[in-house]
Length: 156
Image 1 (cartoon, rainbow, N blue to C red):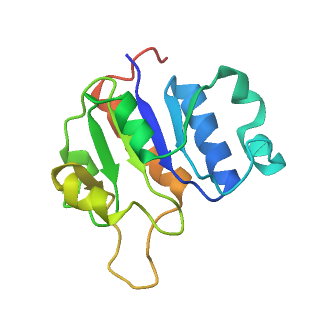
Image 2: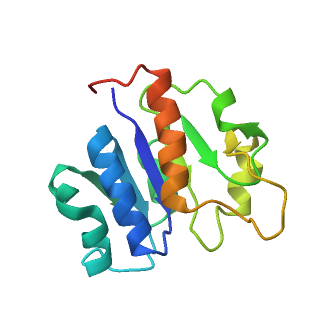
């Protein structure tokens, strides 16, 4: 059993490095959809991921279309502040894909429209100053809920 973290056009290398480390220690695959806001050789990316890179199952796609084409039967969940469902109210399937948008702009509107019933959110206070959580924190919160629902497979 494995789970998949998908980052749509991530901008900040430290976030992606932290997420890579989280994926490595949970046995989750990391999928990156270009364009990336940094080089995969970026020193901040490498530093944030520490020495976990060798344990990481990573996949890179040129665009969103290529990603969806590769997984036509995938079970996708889209983390967004525009989601109607709270992330804890969903029953996640094995091998599902948790998709997160870029730090500066989130996911494209076409995703919100096409997959409205698969958009999830993390509750936050209603305050214009609090737009969203940090990306790496959001990934960890949702991923650990998925792992909890599946009794933390291959852990302990």
